[in-house]
Length: 159
Image (cartoon, rainbow, N blue to C red; front, side):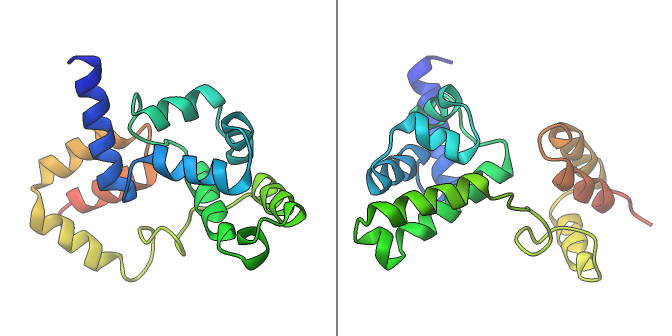
């Protein structure tokens, strides 16, 4: 596949997965906090080249859910009155808070996990895919998304 087609496909995937291209979201943060893209990458916990690849569409996703959680934290902090007003101290504090944060991606903010309501999720998956497809999907996702792979594997076990 040609480079421009790969980029177009990746940007379309970003719209589907994240609501809009990640380049747009990241550029808004760079402008709102008046920082360089490299500094923002450091705050998010991602390498500057990786962030650049995601922004340009050469990569479709942010593989680390903690990085995505930090980006969402920053997007929310933009809405605080002090940061929105351009208060440099508030902006610096917001960036430091996010950089130092260790957000967890768990049951409260990722609604797939071990719990009593899993049966509904497992049943829904079984309704849309056959057992062997669920197992195959789990194998494909195992490396990058082990929690989702585990859920698919459990849904694929009938009986």
